[in-house]
Length: 285
Length: 294
Image (tube, rainbow over all chains, first blue to last red; front, top):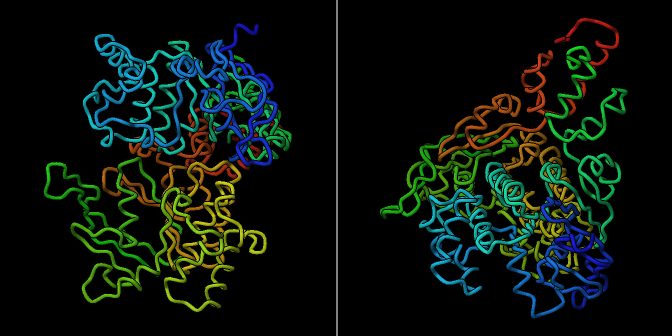
């Protein structure tokens, strides 16, 4: 079981220098290969700190973080960890380093010392995977936010990672940009089996995950499938979080006596359930 | 206070090979007391437009009239006009710099040359508008606060100038649900109580559904559509073509209608959907045939 973990947090605590209380406190979690795990938490809940612990940007004050079998506390392993666990951040403009898309994607590979003849096919493959081949020779500043995030993802893909950790990667994007980044990541998760840790404030994005971790005040307070987590409407609101709009509507209607199934997350779920209640004969056929 | 935009065109990198037209012959009027939502995908021209409303950019051609006066006219007191129009940028908390919350908010009024007494009054007023307790927070460092609180301090800095028009570019981006809700209720109050004219740029259709009295949809430097949220959100294809979506409630309404249920075509608020679904449910229970597609 333990060897099966892609990311393992063992009673992890982390306190920032000069802070009086820990940002992450006794967190224990296991993320399995190929899983898509969403992390929810209010601003300041410790979820970004948790992400940085998974990428060896921080090392725990107490406990252990093990990524792909490597303990992040071992300084010698930092590069082994980062090539396997790539991270995408919120602001697309802060993670582009080169003046041409292709060179930006090459950046990580250059740092790893990959020979040029091997780099070219890896870059081409990575750009193809995020559907940005057309822009290989463009200047990054001419791209949209969603396109820049996809270039950042390509930079990580070129390193052939096992895990991608995204810290609010869609927060600064418009609706179509959000969708294109989310679609790209879901496709990589399903088609290439890359494990995804998806930190977000958007409940409808979390609803697409295999599993959700909820963090409040540095502690992992809940975990479960989206249907399980979002069923706890009051509890989520107490933690300053939300539930997807359709889950909230179903909850209100249930309280008015309408017998809707629990665990409704999307418009499609909702329509199906309404059919069962309003038109049983139609939905039975 | 009204703002009239007449045939506004704006080109970046004019005269070079990189020339791009960000706004193309845009005309619109913002009436006193409106709550306008501007929506459009990245690069549609909405940020360029709001910067013009505050005189931060000069038009390549066209005019911006504030209460009938040309903001870029020769014999106009630009400074006085611009002071009436407060602009809150994206992620405004990055621009906080003072040692205390009160001093940061006082920066604008101080530059206006107001008396100390008036400045203090403005700081208290602005903090109450953004729901930050004066006694508790005025002497705190803004950098010790949460992201949502920092943003409210930054907005208070603009409100302390007592603008007649408040323009906000993505005021809820990156905030958690509670932080977002606080900002939205604060804007709702400002609009209702102080009759401040508000222009908000947002990617969140749900925020727009809650607050805006009128929406302006931008695409490729032009106004694609304008109307009440009800009118705009009933046009899902148009919104999708502009790279946008509609609120979840509007999507549900469309999906249920497509499945044959008797619902008006222009619902976009959750409360409306709730009422209509309960109506269908009670009709079903009483065995009536009303509204049954089956």
